[in-house]
Image (cartoon, rainbow, N blue to C red; front, side):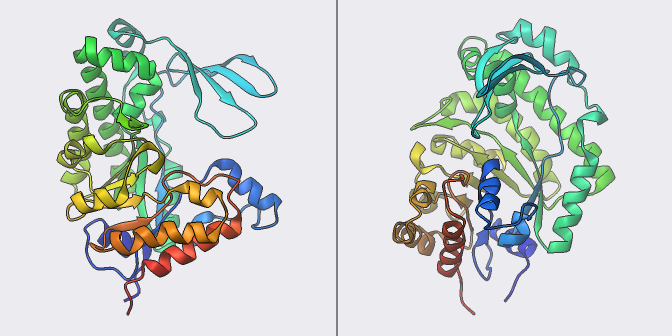
Length: 361
């Protein structure tokens, strides 16, 4: 059989037979710039088309608290920029390379700050939805036969942007009802916005949530805290998708293995990105959950940093023949592809990975 991307991913998320493993990837924004400068690709090339990815995502929501607030630049130099945004968060971004913004300070540090500055502003305003972005991506995916997923942040990731990890985690320990209220408020907002968007522009093929809940060797919270504080909001947001028959993919950087039983209870169908350097082990997870959960990622991106095909071969050959066993795997690195990875290296990674991930005729 020769499936379309939509058919292939739909089957993979249900662990049903396919012709080959799936294919998708994330890149740092300066990677395309570097590859263009090296004359590998044209400046305006669409990576999904160019590499033949099976998925297409659209991130159409803005969940910043104050939609009318214009980001204020507090200080700026040749390398960084310090900005205050509509959440009252003070963030430092780097100009010379892609990186996660540095958390400098937050207006919201406790329940009182949340109730005064943020919660009253979280109405399902239509201005929060980029209808055109969603419409265009949906049509692009339809024409290319790709699986189309709405994508956006879930509650842990949103709360982190409002009060930072430090105050959020202190709140989990000292005032769990505050964090629980934030989580369910954002889950409801997300679902309300999805209802508006999907009623007007049509339903996606699936839902993709970004939810970074771990760091090196540890999740940010214990499984008990997850169940008591975050899981109800996950059940609400993911439950909305599942009630409409939509599969749910969850991206989570860091070590999140202890949280997987709760995520499965919430309704997750596929775990992405399975970060090796944080302690995640694709083969271990496959052996434990491969019959009930699909996987995307888990290929150590540091092997691609080497631009050494023998090292890449060893990583792929150790994993792909095993994890393709239940038809529930999508080829993806365990993070994003940086500009230090050569274009030719990434092309080889795809070629070899899909060779190993073929199911034959």
